[in-house]
Image 1 (tube, one colour):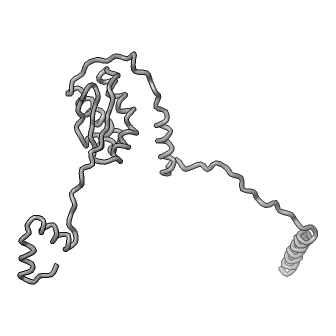
Image 2 (cartoon, rainbow, N blue to C red; image 1 turned 180 degrees about the vertical axis):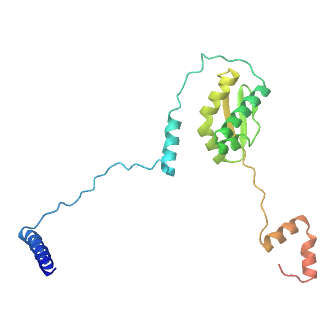
Image 3 (cartoon, rainbow, N blue to C red; image 1 turned 45 degrees about the vertical axis):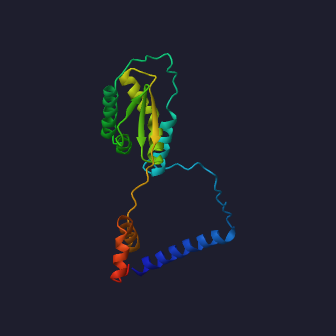
Length: 190
């Protein structure tokens, strides 16, 4: 057993000495890696890639000359039916935010234009981004290619809520001025 241990120790030490000689004989020059500006690819599951895909889909909408297309007469009921069908299709495809914006107001027809009034500009911009798709479907359903969608914003001042005791007191004082006298007579704080 001793012979095998000695030979193993000698073999290990000679291998170690050879490695040491190689390491000390010539210094090895390593090249420094260079970072090149490579276009970063995003994951297919990231929010950024989903947003890019939406932008690409929006760009793919083609502009078509509708002046030579049919202009069949239609009624308000037909417009509402086509509108509802499109909203139902959006919900079925998982686009609930656009569907809820379209359901925010009942469309009305004036001079072969569909008018819809929305409460804020954010909803208007989101609906404007989907306007070509909406018009394409409604024009095909009604067989009238002169239809246009007009989106209006009616920003009515929102109801202001009273949160602090001072705001509540001022609100009550506006409704009933005798509250101020009552507060003074009873010597109450706000």
